[in-house]
Length: 485
Image 1 (tube, rainbow, N blue to C red):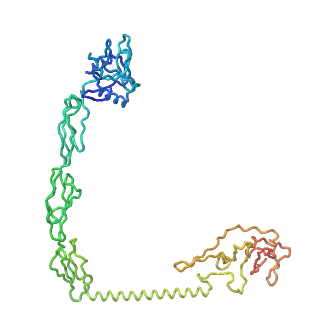
Image 2 (spheres, one colour):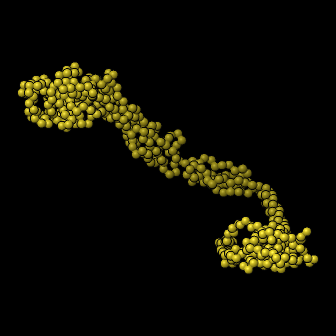
Image 3 (cartoon, rainbow, N blue to C red):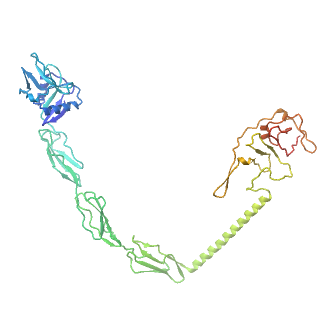
C-alpha cells in the first residue's frame, strides 16, 4: 500500500498493483484496521482527487466505501449517503438488479462513476494513523525518542548544542491523529550581553553582535598600549559569558635606550616621545643620529649611532684615496690601449664603422670582381672574389633605400630583400681554354657566345671569360687576369 494523504486525522492509502472485487477490497481494509473510505465529504473528495492526480499510481479506477442496496446508495457501514455530498461524474444508470459500487475514475478526472462490484479494481483504505512521520529537528538541535519507532504515543525530547539555547517546547508526542504535538523548537545562539564601559579606550565588536562566538577588540588611547598581562580580545563563550577579564592600558615604554660603545647616552624618560642624546668620548667621532626618540610602536627611532676613533677614520680615508688613484690609472691605461688599437687598425685600412661602396677610390691593382647589372633595375649585386677578408657587398639604387632617424641618434636602414637563385650552368661554348698573352691580357675567341643576363649576374672572376656583353643592359668588368696552365 502507498500513502496518499492524511486528512482530518485519517490516513488514506492505495494499492499499487493488486486488484480485487469490491467485497474483497473491503475485507482487505478491515484486516488493516480500517475500511474503504466512508462519509467522503466535498473537502475529502477534493483532497483525494489532488492526491491521486499527483501520485505515481498507474490504475485508472479505485474502489471506495459506497455501494448500492436496493434503490439507495449507502456507505459501507450502512448509513445512507447525504445527497448534498455526492460527486458523480454523471447520474448512475439503472443496475437491473446487479450489485453496484462506486469508484474514483481517472478518465472522469477522479470523479465518481458506478461499476459492478464483481469487477477487479485497485482500492483505497481509510484507517486511523498508527505512526507519525519524522518529527524533524532544527539547525544546531538534537532529538531523542522514547521508543525505536514513531508509533502513536511515542515522545521525543529536544536539546541544543553548546552555545545555543532552546526556544519552544522541548517535549513532543505522536498523537492518535498521526501528528506530533506542538511545533519543532529552534536553537538560538546564547547572548553574552553588552560589554562593560571601558574608560581606557574603545571597544569594537568585530562581528557586530554579542552572541556566542562574537569577538570584541580593545584599543587603548593614544600614547598607551594594552598590558602584556591582559589580552586585547574577548570572546562570547558557550556559557553566555565574555572570556578573560577586562584589559587595562599602560603608557608606551620603549625601555632603556641602546648603549653606545666608546660613548654615553643621556635620557630622562622611556615613555612615548621621550628623547635620548648620544655623545662620544675624546678622540672619537659620532657617526649617525645624535638624538633618538621613543616612538608610538614602543621602539627607539632612528637607529642608535656608533663612535669611531679619529685615527681609524684617517686610515679609512687614506685607503679610499689610494684606491681611487689606482682606479684612475687603470682607466687611463685602458683608454690609451683602445686608442692604440684603433690607430693600428686604421693604418691597416680596416675600420669597423666604415661603409664600403663600389666607387671607393682608384686601386693600383686590378679589382678582383665581376660586376653585373640585370635587366630589372630593382636589383644590383656586386660579388667579390676571395680576398683577405671574406665579405659580400650589396649595391642598392637610392630610390629603394629607406633611412629613418631613431630617437637614440642611430640610423635605421631598410634594404630590399634579395632572393637567392641557383647559379645557372654555363654553355659548352663558354668553357673552352683561354690563351694568355705575354702581357697577361685575355684574348677572347671571336666565336664565343654572349652570356645571358642571369649568367652575367651570377658570374665570378674564376669563371670563363665571355666575349662581349649582350645587347641588354648587362655587362661585366674584369680586372684580374687568370693564369691558365
